[in-house]
Structure formats: structure tokens, C-alpha cells
Image (cartoon, rainbow, N blue to C red; front, side, top):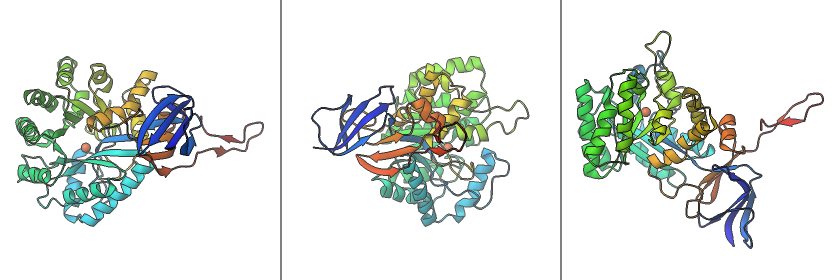
Length: 424
Ligand code: FE2
């Protein structure tokens, strides 16, 4: 007798009519058609719908989430006003409020089948109030979300007083990943020095690295080059990520033809944040307005692991969002014009397997031995899932059902037409 048997499921690789057996929170068998002679405590007929590994957000700011309008709204819509606004909000923050907002966001995440999140946490404040708050959240949500924290010196690790010490103290407290923001340091050379310093800290401590890198429209902002170089120099291949990299959108094509192979060679992964990049970048332009998203298809074609992050939900930088990684993938494929079938599938990978690779998640996927942490979507394949930002009919975490959304069918009252439609 096994714990759970799911029948008649479609999988993300296109296989249909699949059965998935689960025992003790792990997938024990995945096979085409029925599994003979198996008794299960619970059987779920997937009805031909898509069973996907859970969504993964590899880039988020949970200390700021759901604070939209506090203490005021970002009028210009720029990254820099957002950073200034966050600076106004920080002295007013209370740990209890950060924790409560983060827990509410995690409820939304679970409802959307998002069960792993890498969140940056601002280490600029010497009290490390946000760090302590998110470490508490990490503990509380551990049964249902893998929350990985990045020590993020929002005000610049070299630019802000005590920046290096505060970041190291955050790591001492248990923050998982070394972050940075080289484009916010005072000069380009200070930015490069911060990348070198932070990669050395990561190498000494055996930690992963994830830097906000070149989040601007400046075609000459080239910290991603330094990050790739330091990754190779320190032997950190496969353990480093460059987030945003929006300046690549504006860079000279010849230079990029040299840069992308360097990124690929260093095995640095890249995270684009389509919803945020498209709204924050190009704000100094008249027309044409640059979109500012990094060069996903070209990076992917070169073999770079590219993932998409949500970055913000209702905070000083962005007033939209609900924790829906299908919305992120939907925007990503539009901005990058990845509208081929292959391109759409790659955008689905960017919020699932590629993002899991960035976070170094173990036991991820739908295969024997993987955790039974998956989502049943009201869609028949990944293309339909993105098109519809499909309902998460059921969300399981290690074999336990933790969220359900009823299937949608809209009643229509039209002559000579069916009584309902569900957009499928
Ligand atoms: Fe970010």
C-alpha cells in the first residue's frame, strides 16, 4: 500500500497518461499508463492535466514585500527612487510587521505552487533587524517552503559605513548566500572591488554567490564581466549567479559577443526579472524606450543557465504581483520575444528547473527519488499553462496536499453555444 497515486497526468516533457506513485514524501515510480498491482491510500485522477515540479523563484525581496505605499508611493517609478523610498521605510520597520507580511506572502506563494524562494535581505542596517526577521520566517515556513536567504548590502558594501562587517555578521547568523550591488558603489572601480571582495568572502566560507549586477541602462556597466572573471579565478564555477544584468540590453553587440562566452565558460547563471526590468529600466529614455531585460535567448543558446525571478511584489519598486511565477514566465516570453514553442518551453524551465539549479535544490523534479513536491495545473501542457496562468488545482509538498484551487469554468448564456467555457 502506497500513500498516493496520481493517474492520467501530463508531464512537462510532453508525456501524457502518466502515473506517479508516492511513498513517504518521495516519488517511487513514474510510468506510462496504470501501475499494475498497486494499492494506494489515496488516488487522484489528474484528468489529463499537467503535473509540474513546483515553481521556484530564484530572486525575491521578502523583507520589502507587501509594503506598497509605506510610507509613500514611488512617483517616478525608477530604481533609484525605489532605493531612496526603501531608505525612508527602513527606520520605521518593525520585526513583527516584516515577519507578518512575509508569512502572508508565503501563503500566497503556496497557493500558487511556489515552494522554493531565494530572497535577498538587506544587511545595510547595523541592527540586522530584517535579517533576524527573515531568519525567523525561514524557520517558520520550512515545513512548506525552501527559503534561501542572500546577504544583500542594498546601500553598497563599500559605499555604506560598516557594510562589510554587517554583511559578515548576517552570514554568521546563518544567511545562506553572499550578495552584492556593484553598480550602486560610488565608482565603477569600487564596484569591481566589491565583486572581488564578496567573491573572496564566498570562497572562504564555501557559500554560493548572487549579485545584483549592472541593474541599469548604462551600456558601459560591466560588473558581470568582473563577476565571471572572479568566479573563474576563485574556482567558484557553477556556484555564482548574476541577477538582472539589464545593462546587457544596451551594450555594444561586439562586446557582448565576447562577454557571453565568458559567462558561459565561468558557469555563472543569470537571472532576469522581467516584470521589474521592463518597468524600472528605460526611465531616462524618451522614445524609443529601452526594455532593459538582459539577453535571455542569446545566453540560453550559449549554454548559460538562465532563470526568471519575481523580484518584487507590492513594494517600493513595484505595486503589482501575487507570487505567480507563470505571470513572470508570461512577461518573460513577451519581452524576450521567445514565442516559438521551444522558446515558450524555455520560459517555463526558467521558473522551474533552471531556477532550481540556481538554488542548488536537491531532489527536484518528477522522477523516482525526487521529493513529491509538485503542482497539478488546469492546463494540458506548459504552453497552455503560461497562456492561461493556469489554476493550481492541487499543490503537494513532500506528498502532503497543502493547497487547492477549484477548476474554473465560466457559465455563458448565449444562443446555440455551450453552457460553459474554460479557455482550453
Ligand atoms: Fe532584486
